[in-house]
Every structure is written in structure tokens, then in C-alpha cells.
Length: 82
Image 1 (spheres, rainbow, N blue to C red):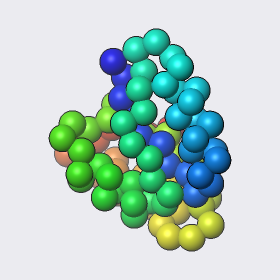
Image 2: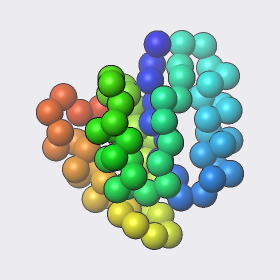
Image 3: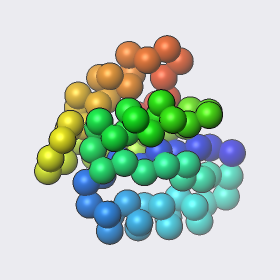
């Protein structure tokens, strides 16, 4: 099972992505975040890291995707970030 974290500042986009991801065989969305800072919080709170973070690069408020990607990829054993 491929585990995915969805990060986007638009709730309707996150819902649509979740619906598409969860409809794929052997893929599941394990969390959602509205900005980069929330993504880091969600990652810290998960028992098991996702395999992939699907990251929006330009978010309206909060930490943008580029900075969040930099911080996530600096973690020990980081997930892939798209």
C-alpha cells in the first residue's frame, strides 16, 4: 500500500485529490494539510510516515511548498515529495 499525504491550501482540491487517490488500487491518503507548517505537524503526528507527499508549491498563507519540501526532505528517512 502506497501512503500519501496531501498538502494544498484549497479544501476542494484536497477533497478531489483524496477521492482520486483513494480510488486507486494499493494507494491511500493518510492525511491532509492546508500549508507547509501543518504538513510538518501531520507528519510528526503519524505513527508511520507516508511514502509520498503531494505538495502544492504556492499556497495563499502559511509556509509555502518550497520551504516545506526543503524541511521534509531534510528529515531522516524522508518521504518522496511531488
